[in-house]
Image 1 (cartoon, rainbow, N blue to C red):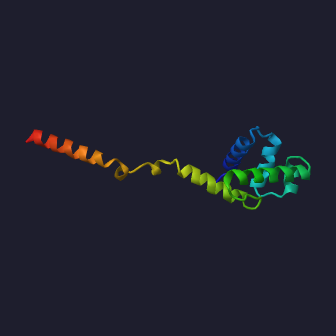
Image 2: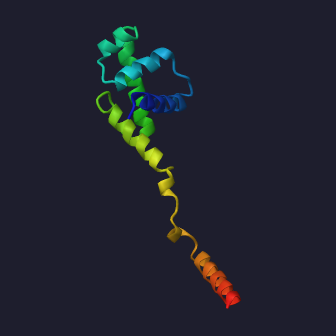
Image 3: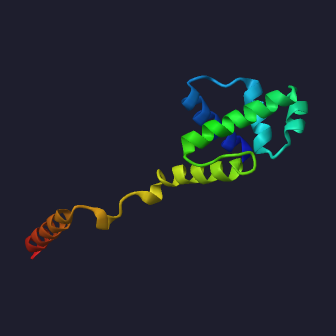
Length: 123
């Protein structure tokens, strides 16, 4: 799964939980977390100080943990987000639409009655 997809998913969760839009710096820091970078590398890339990178990364993981009901840390964040995103996507996919067997049984009787009625007309 693409890092940008996971970042967008994480950002939407964090924004919804906090009620605040995230800054570009916060987004860039968490993007680095998703890429598996160290906080030192993230601080250099952003640029920001090391404590800011650590604080933002751990804050997002804490918020995601509460929202997703699963412990989220720097080491497992990608796996957890992928799993939750796939679960969310599969619950709304077209393959999960009710099958014909899940329809009201009376519908089958109605179809049979209509079929018999139509058959009687042609004979």
